[in-house]
Length: 446
Image (cartoon, rainbow, N blue to C red; front, top):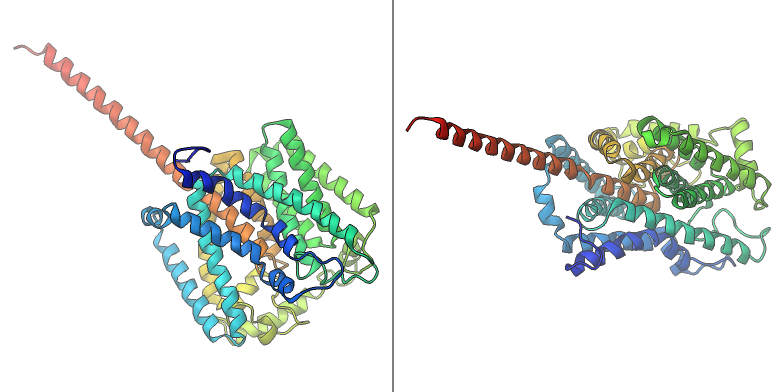
């Protein structure tokens, strides 16, 4: 049962207010700790940016709160299909073993630890969203956090002393590469479109649409074609799955908002870099190398997988075993998993994903507006991961797992509702039987 704000259980009230908002504002904290428009980076700032420390800190805090709120006891009561347990245990064993024997061991251990933290974070969010806060609390916190992030984004641009000499590729706040901003912005755009479609009040719909359009436009301004395509793909999936998005008011407003963002970015001042702006996106899309070298990267990765197909090399080993322009990941989640954990690990991940979707889609459809924004954000990140690195870096990973957790939090609702219905039916049958027995006894001769 959810605790209400100001309720008797102070721990739950504290968790309800703090956990979603700390996570939603984590990107803002990342900005605050990496604010350097002059380009003079300290080693501490570089470490915070490289390891996405505020985001990981917010996840660890949520895990600690969930443990305090009885996560372990709740997990003992969860029913896990045997295939899921086997796939998860085998994948964990492969990930730990390959990290311990990877060519670049330190990096593999850190990235594997991050995956484990994300998985625990998803369990924590599932537990807390079932008992303490609602999925809509997380959606509001993420959108509010993005609104503050957007203000900081433009303030950072205004504070850059010389746009012509600024390192737009590696010198931006929060992200070690400007294109990584698209992972966060694409997820927020999809989240906002989902929130717009299910909002009950016109003011909330307008605010969500404006934030979604702003995120979409900012992604385009950074030159991120992939994020824009992922948002469109997420909208298409949402229209297929959810009646709320099939309404002309919803998809029409979404398309109008994205079109307005494109128009504004088209005329807005662009950074003097071939990495940036809508012009870059158009030129790369219509030019000869539409994939911007991805096919070459994928061929190198496939050759490396063929040399060690079963269990892979460990997470984050591409620069050692399949070098391509000093890249750390292959811009494709399927190849990323196969390179890291082999075809066996990829199969385990596929089993877990299929089992999750088999529950998540009907749950999101049944719950309606409560889960559509989270589902759309997850979808955008997943689509983007097929041709970019949105499931390699910590910030988009954390958003993906947070949304996965709040969707999973509603799985028990159906079971509890069914149990209550069965109990009511059994009680009604018992009452009818009792009345019948009483009536029969009264009508029988002495």
